[in-house]
Structure formats: structure tokens, C-alpha cells
Length: 64
Image (tube, rainbow, N blue to C red; front, top):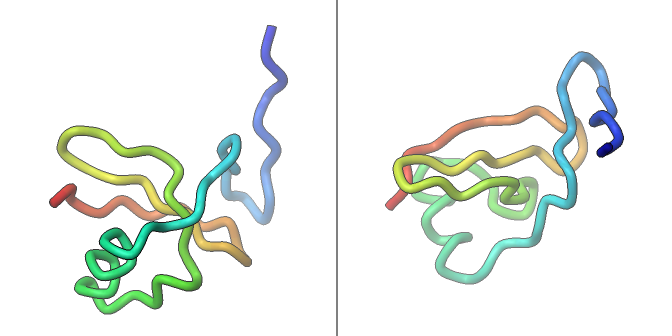
């Protein structure tokens, strides 16, 4: 059985968010977000779940 995800300041942290590639950085910057502050947690067919590096706040953006 997997361990439950930890919660930081009310936000659920997901397992192992990863760094962005150059193309992903450019795409996230197109939403007026600083790509150095965000990690990709999940890539779905219609959306991406990104997580803020410092606060752990999740955000969903549409997939390209």
C-alpha cells in the first residue's frame, strides 16, 4: 500500500514533480508564469498539473 501524500499549508503535494524542458518553460511563460517557480506533476491529454516549487500550490493549465 502506498503512503499517503503529505500536505503543506493545506495543499496536497504529489510524488516527484519534475523539472521543465525548454519547450515546457516557454509554454508556461506564455501564461505569464515564471517557469523557474513551477514543476510539472502530471501531464494529461487535455491539461497539465503544475506545482509551485516553494508553496506547493497546484495549478492546472490547458495542454498545448
